[in-house]
Length: 230
Image (cartoon, rainbow, N blue to C red; front, top):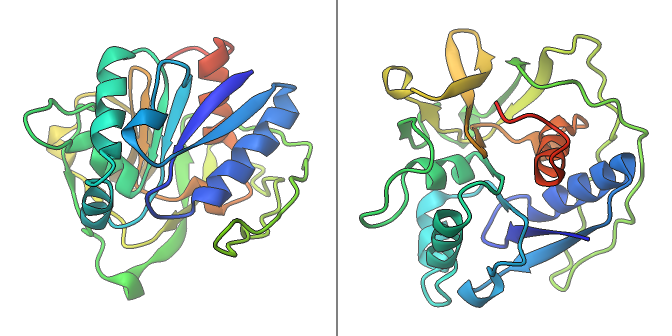
């Protein structure tokens, strides 16, 4: 049983959960999604982490009382080979951790660099990850304790081009091109929108809001050793 930690800070947390569970069905893996709300939830039994999108400053403030971000950062320092997927604000948290900690990815990043909410957009992104051919497995969509029901997302990618990914950019951050010294795995034109640094993957868009599950598949395969590390 794989235990995948999901930081319950902001963003499309339950869409990430649904994508992970559907990918696990395709890969025939037993997966438990662990909701991370405080530092004590982030222990050595967690096999991988997802840092969702949201507003990074609000996420830092929201985590202060329970020490969640500090616990996550400590976990990453002690388990440096375990995979982490950071999307949008999650990428910011990897690139700009709190205090004196060193960045977890070798890439500078700027917050909200694409503009305000009304400048959010969708566009095809060139991605250097294998296309995940989904069985379109369905996960039961039940409301959580706050009445949040995951978006209904068709799990079958509609991209025939294996390098194309449906990028959803919502008040997206921007990688600073000259500062990126790790592997580039996603581009939008000349812009770098996804990087891989060892076991850490950071993208400035929202893969959980699409039907293409290859990033969640990557996370699970990395955890089980099924996929090579870029």
